[in-house]
Image 1 (tube, rainbow, N blue to C red):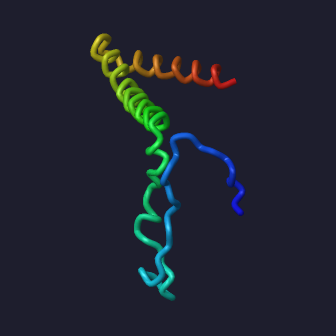
Image 2 (cartoon, rainbow, N blue to C red; image 1 turned 90 degrees about the vertical axis):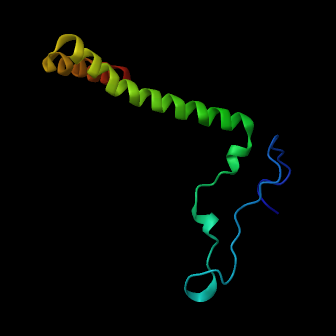
Length: 100
C-alpha cells in the first residue's frame, strides 16, 4: 500500500507516473522512455498551478526587461555611465539591506 493511499487530491485525476519500458534502449535492455527524461508536465494539468506558473514566467520576463530598460533609460536621459553605476550601487545596497 502506498503512503498516499486515502489522500484525495482535488483536480488531480488520471495523472499516472512515467513508466519504464523494457527493451527501449540502453545496455541490458532496461531503458526508459524518452518522456521519462523530459520535464514533468503533469502538474500543469491543475488549473490553479498552471495560472501560478504562467504568472511567474511573466513576472520573470518583466523583471529581466526592467533590468535592461532602467539603466538604458537612465543613460539616455543623463548621458553619464557614472550615474548608471551609482544607480546600480544603490539598487545593490537596497537588495542587501532588504535581505537582512
